[in-house]
Length: 214
Image (tube, rainbow, N blue to C red; front, top):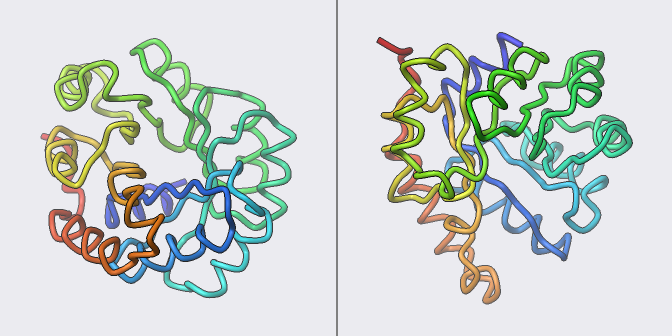
C-alpha cells in the first residue's frame, strides 16, 4: 500500500461526507473538491452510496472517492464492488482488512487505545483511524502516542476542525478526517456551498506534505 501512504502524505485531509440525501452528498463532495480537497470518504450509510461513489469518481477524476462506516464483510464486499478507492471502518475487522487486501483496496481500520492501534496495524490495516480522538484528549493524546507508535500511520477523526488540523498534523498525524466542522449544518441545510468551498480552501492552506518523523 505504498501508493496509498504516498497519497496521504501529499494530501493530508480526507473530507468525510455523510448525508441522508444523495443529491446533497454529491454537492458536499463537489464543494470540497472545489476547495482543493482530493480525498473523499462517502460513508456507506449515506443515501445511495453504492451508486454515488462511482458517479463522483467519474465527475472528479483528480480525486479519490472512498467509503466509510463499513461495519461488516458484507458491506465491505458491496463497497468494493461499487468501485471505492479506499475503506474506513470504525473498528478493526481482520475479515474486512483481508477483503481489501485481496482487492488491492486500502482498509483504514478504526482504533483508539494503544493496544487497539497496534492490533489494527498488525492485522494489515493500510493506516489506522484514531476515533473518536476528541473523547481522549485530541491533539494531546496523539502527542502521547507518537514516542511509542510513531511508525504507524495515524489518521485522527472525530473532533478534527479547520482550527486544529495543523496541530494534529504537526503532532505526527499522516492525515486527518474532517466532517461536521467542514460541512457545518447551517451551510449544508441552506445549500451555501460557497461557505464550504471557502472553508476547504482555508483548511488546505494549512497543509504541507508529510515530511516524516524525526
